[in-house]
Image 1 (tube, rainbow, N blue to C red):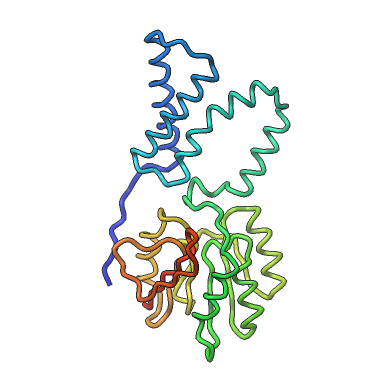
Image 2: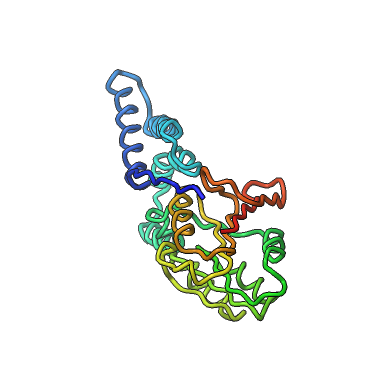
Length: 251
């Protein structure tokens, strides 16, 4: 199998900060040039410029909309005189749910029920095997599979604090084991099936890790995001919805 070369880029948070700063400078240049704008109008212009810059620079698909609304949202919040306590509460909530996203570049995605049914069909019916969900979110995948195949071992890893706690309880009740760990720190050689529903960003590095560690005959399954330059042995289109396609590689 072809090895994937990894490209090094600045962190998404750093790129986002540069994009916002560049957009603010361009929008400020309009004011200096004599274009009359209210603060609200300037915020909208700045957001539109930031969105275009992010798109031009090839940012992940969720960044352009965030750039569009970031500064306008600050202006609206300031005009609404929102109490500082609400800002603090919102920050803590987002930190608990998405606190690891800036480092891992993986937002919280939940696997649909119909996708879980197809995953169950990929597990060999006459074998007792080990399955791991990398970035297991709320633990719904491994909990559902454990109830269907109680003789198999289902593990999950999740780095975001609040989803980890939820998955630890929900999947733990079903008999699964969940740890709070970075997916790149997991020894994949211990598993017969490795499942991931992540984002495009970590796929090259994860694929290289899978090639190094996974045993011959084991399955690597990605939902929604293919591995660049690695042709899967099987592609299962569960539905026409975005990210409802399973990509399967037998190592």
